[in-house]
Length: 366
Ligand SMILES: Cc1ncc(COP(=O)(O)O)c(C=O)c1O
Image (cartoon, rainbow, N blue to C red):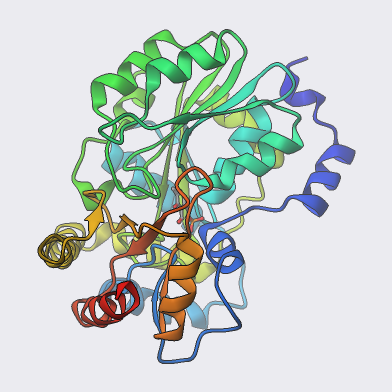
């Protein structure tokens, strides 16, 4: 019996009651200063896409609302079919979820445990920490390299033979920086047997970098996560995908609900069918990001150059203070990480929102 099976129903109930699936929304809310933001606040604290769903998705979801009294029998299969076709992996290599935080948790639950550690970067998206702790797995947080990539060699060294999951977020949250493809290949080729490399591609569309889905198609011990929350602007609508070899997906199946709202399904299917959405959005958000970067450079602020929809700024004092001062200006920015306490994360909003950000940031930084 594999370790994952040793995770009993009773333990699962305990987990469900005590850990829950931690999403970016929960992490952003937990660190939000003060009470609820005013309705006219600029919200650039949770890496959301200010453009929201594309026109095709909106239309499809409006149609889906009328069918909301019914369960979705066929749409999950249609979403799987489209993903499998577009990503070039077999249908049995694709599973759909209500967002990608959900399968992220389940992969950690299934593959980590005592003697099978969770190996992640620092700073990184923290969502996998809770299930790793719950399973009694050691957590190795390995600082990013000087180029802000995952230090895969150090990750391998720290884990030794006792690794369960190597989590690689590409581009990384919060830094918005890429790990070179060869480094991920090195990790996959040199990781201990029985472990998996979990490649989180929530933000890959913003960067235009090559996906690791081909490693899934090649039968490697790799699970790739995709979400409709970011480039497709559907964070509140909940759709995501895990891609992996059928035997790997089978390990997370016992913990999966796989139940998506009919709106999330319809919006995801329409988004995949829509033409030009990814390229247009990538271009727009890149333009806004580059404008903010050239302003920050001109003003002498220090930031980590990002290829994603968020970036880290060095504020030279406790990040929490800056978050609170920005909130007073009605601009809600993202959190700091314990290992980078003087950096705050800023998500890319619309052009207009980033103008408000610039004004507020200049006042706060004095
Ligand atoms: C790195 C990373 N992975 C996955 C997600 C998944 O989000 P969702 O559950 O909305 O798909 C997020 C959200 O911010 C994220 O930052």
